[in-house]
Image (cartoon, rainbow, N blue to C red; front, top):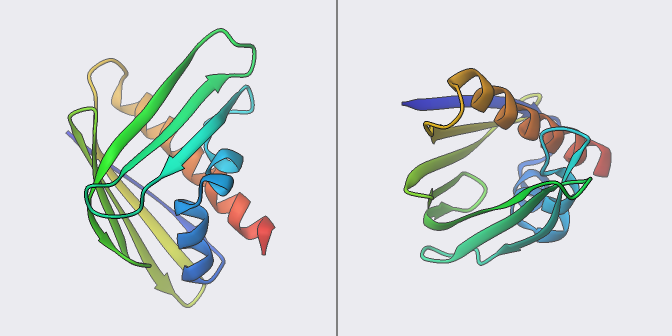
Amino acid sequence: MQIAIETLVRAPVAAVWKAWTTPEDIVQWNSASPDWHTTHASVDLRVGGSFSSRMEAKDGSMGFDFEGEYTEIVEHQLLAANFGGRALRVEFIPGEKGVTVCETFEAESTHSEQQQRQGWQAILDNFARHVEASR
């Protein structure tokens, strides 16, 4: 099953792209709730290159690595990747009010569709707030 989410980021596409692909930015926005954070991120932005984010509960009770490999890159427009045997597609669509970031990913079977949609949307909303506050 595919899940699609999106948000509007009121910023130029170059700023949106940079924040999405720069490890120093990723560690600032990549969490679904205030009790989680990303402690480390890496990006090798090329087809066949890898990305990784270490996400941990702030109380140290749990954590996991979100990592994958880029399969398609069109600067300022599209990132596609495989992660954990699943596919991810992120589109950056400039418009009058800013950039719409659309993320489509294959669901996993451990959590419900609603839980996955809410968690990924929360991260995407944090991303938009980070970019807008950084301008």
